[in-house]
Length: 327
Image (cartoon, rainbow, N blue to C red; front, top):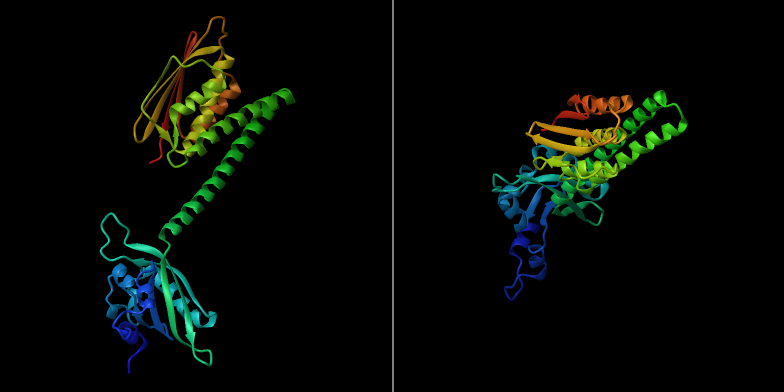
């Protein structure tokens, strides 16, 4: 006596033509299969064989489980055990693609769903299911989770920076207006940097753009020299280095240093930036402000694990910053 699967494989119309449902099943973009009431497969579509490389004989029974990623097999079996009680099968797991090239992934995420055909007493007599490719959706979901985690982490870091600024200013400021002005200035700098960070988060922030933004924000003239290789900074490095550049630009403005030159060299492991400034006519000599220097030191040494050397000769100041770059 023929089984359901045997009848399905051999089914033809009286005229020898395949019925429409057979052509439909073999043309849809899903892997289609049928099992008995216990979950033993009795038939799989050509799509399953083409994707996994399993012959019809290999996929029958629980042979199909060989195509499931080893880490997902127990979870898949548990879903099958619960299927009769729940009235449906639903599981996401990875399936192996046969003959995957070296540059291609061997396993892809699929959503496997099935519903039963029931006897008069309600017991499942067979299961009909599909496995649908959700790999791109799964990768998108993972990327979204990473993005949410990164946004939360950056939010916490930015709040910590703001908290540190407010505490330090409160210790040194003489008036409430001074506190407001100082905090407002740093928040404006953070907003500018975040605008650049979020513009193209996957490719990073261009160093020259970060420098020009701070010079422009402080109404400093076009630098007499702005030179170095194209460097894209990760969001984390850009946030901290951007605030350090803000302190450098602010110090130059307050000391009347309006002749700015910025150059840099980079290797895969380190960025070395040289900031040079010269006082304009009638400018007073200064050190850039004690509080600003403390903020600069914290951002460079503590947040970026960078080193900085400052040299002052007459009306000229030269700061060399070496920033380790994440690999």
